[in-house]
Amino acid sequence: MTTGTTIASLADVPESGSLLFTVADGHAEDREAILVRCDEEPGVRAWINTCPHEYQRLDRGRGAAMRDGEIICPKHGSMFDACSGECDNGEAAGTTLPSVSVAVEDGEVLLADDDYTFRHEGGIDDDGPSSTSHIGF
Image 1 (tube, rainbow, N blue to C red):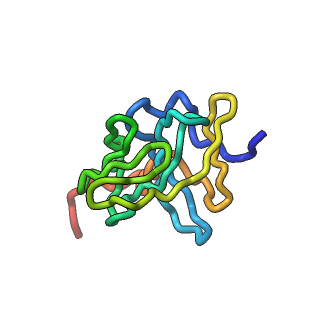
Image 2: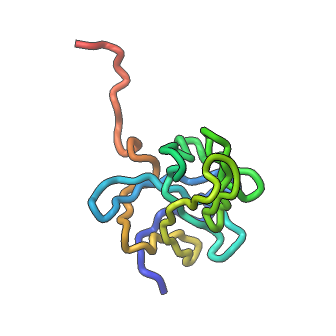
């Protein structure tokens, strides 16, 4: 049995696209991560939500673009294998997405990575209300 914090229900991870969540790294810095479906066990993988070629969020809050089991960088179109995180094309060729270890138990996706602490579902800026006022002082 794996111990870890529940990130989401496996049923909540879209078949195509991603589920965005926030973790804290070993320096207590918040980092965005994504859960994506994968054909290999345990059926999902988690990656830090940044293209390793050039800082670019893969999931901008509406799910990462995916095609044929690959995550597409919205800036240059490089494609990363959803299971291995490896890229063999475009500007990011030869790079690999930084991984976040997860496990699946009883239909729940658990954080199984000692280097990260689960903060919340959603992106870094999704943890509270923000002002919508257009009035400046």
